[in-house]
Image (cartoon, rainbow, N blue to C red; front, side, top):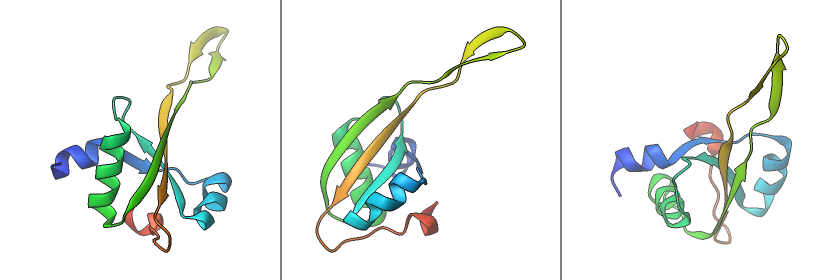
Amino acid sequence: MSNERILSVLRAPRISEKSARIAETSQYVFEVAAEATKADVKTAVEQLFDVKVEAVNLVNVKGKVKSFRFRPGTRAGLRKAYVRLAEGQTIDVMAKA
């Protein structure tokens, strides 16, 4: 996989309380492209961070319906990837972000 494809698959790490809590169990959360597959995410994380990925779970998050000046609209949705690493491996997502 080329560097251009890797950077287009992985958009950014998702930093939240939940992601910080599950990072202790060597599981990390990334925002990924809408067309990314589990295999794409696995190879991108393995090549970018030089780690061994055990499992990848993808989640589609729908955008919220909001209104602005009495006109309803929808925020953009996103796709998240929960990546579980092999035992004893870690990623410093703050350094790569």
